[in-house]
Image 1 (cartoon, rainbow, N blue to C red):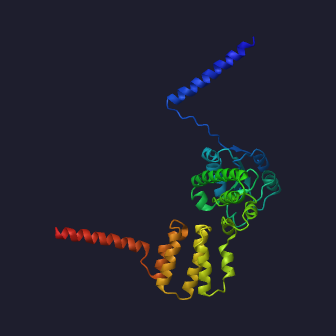
Image 2 (image 1 turned 120 degrees about the vertical axis):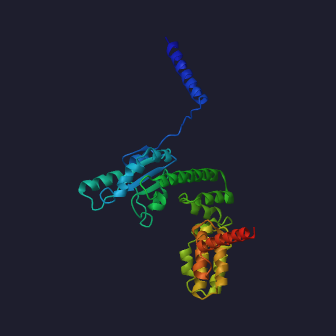
Image 3 (image 1 turned 135 degrees about the vertical axis):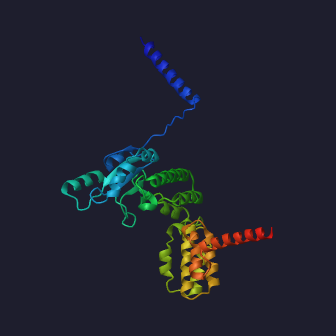
Length: 334
C-alpha cells in the first residue's frame, strides 16, 4: 500500500526526465526564464519584490493618449514582461484634475510610491525602476528612452540593460561586505558609478573607509560642473585654465565630467577672443577624451562653427570629390 504512490512518483519522475532529454536531443530550447508578475497596487508589488526590484509605469488616463495606448502596446506586452525578468510590475495612473473616484483610485494604486523629482518626471509615460527597498535606480522617459513609436522596444532594451547593472551593483556590494578599508571603498565606489543610481549611503560609506580619497571616488561622486562654474565665474582665463585642467587631467572623474568642465574653459576662451588655433587645440583635446560621447560627437561641428573648419558633411564630400578626380585622371591617362 505504501509502495504504490512511491512507484507512481518514480514513474512520473522518469517520464519527466525522459521528456526533457528527448526535447534536448530533438534540438528544442527549454526556457527556464520567468516573466515578471503584475500587481494592481504598488503596495502589493513591493511586498512581493525580490532582488530584481520593482518596475512602475506612470501614465495619464484622462490627459495623455500616448501613455494610454502604450499601456497595452508596450507595458502589457509579453516582451516587456520578459524584459523585466523577475521584477514585480505595477501601472500607476496619474490623473489631471481627477474626480473624487479617480483620486481614490490613484491613491489606492499608488500608495507608498514616491513620485520622481520634477526634473526627472518630464512626461508620460514614464518608467521608474526601483530596487527591492523601493529606491529608484533608473528612470525612462521621453523618446530617447521609450522610442518614438508605441511598441516601447527601446524601453525594453534599457530595462534589460539597467537590470543587468542592478545585478552588478548587488554583486559588488556583496563583495564589499567581505572586504575592508580601501578595497571595500573601491568596490562601493564602482557600485556607485555603473550608470544607474548607486546604493543608498554609498558615498557616506566611502568617506568613512577612504577619508583621504585615495580611490578618487569622493571627488567623482561629489563633483558638479555647474557648481564648479559658479565658483570660478570671476576667474581670469589663466586661473580658470589651471582649475579646469586639474579636473581634466584627473582620471578619477568620469569622462563626461571632464568634458563638461573642459567646455567651460573653451567657452571662456571664445568669449575672450582666443584665436582659432588656440580654440582648435582645446576643442580637439576635449573631444579626444571620449570621441563616442555626445561632446565627442559634436567636436567637428564646433570646429566648423567656431574655428571655420570644413563642415563634417563638406569634408566628406570633398574627400569623395578628390577620389572622383583621381579616378577620372587615371582614366584619361589610360
